[in-house]
Image 1 (cartoon, rainbow, N blue to C red):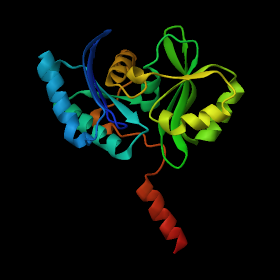
Image 2 (cartoon, one colour):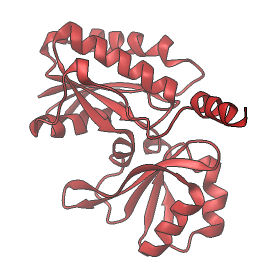
Image 3 (cartoon, rainbow, N blue to C red):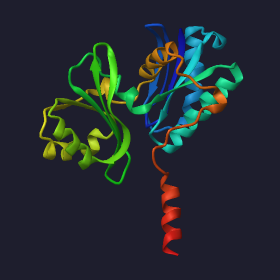
Length: 235
């Protein structure tokens, strides 16, 4: 099983190819460039360096959301176009699950926190049962204080991952009543390798959609939509 993984759900852009349990290639960039500039060239580079025949890919896995609205749209359009051109299915991986999968083999809870602005985070809560990463609490958009309160009731050690760490680290330090740690640099942001590896698992269970049926998971309305609704309500 050979899976192309794509993640553009946050500031990080990533492309990876996983074949069964082997990571063949990964290209990650976390810099001040738009995903529309970087994503297709990154795919081209991975394909060139691995001498990959795109037709040999079994499916395309994508971080389907939540995350940056612009990033999700770019990633969705990219994989949809490739899927339609190559007649390949799309594997929709929840972004928070992909982030949590960066941390392996722990008995702690894994909690991704992606900054969603206005003191909200995109988050979920996960744990390992044997070799399987399972969902304890589904991904959602929630106030960071509500998340900390929820974790306080669980009385478990927690590993935080995600770009919300530098934004909310002080708040967590002040309010957490549980043991916790923050994941280090190599595993605290989105990685396409995790998306592709989960894609292999999803594909083995036939958890795929056709390219024309794929759409991102936003969880909440965009800022532009919210502002438009607020403006209409005040008129």
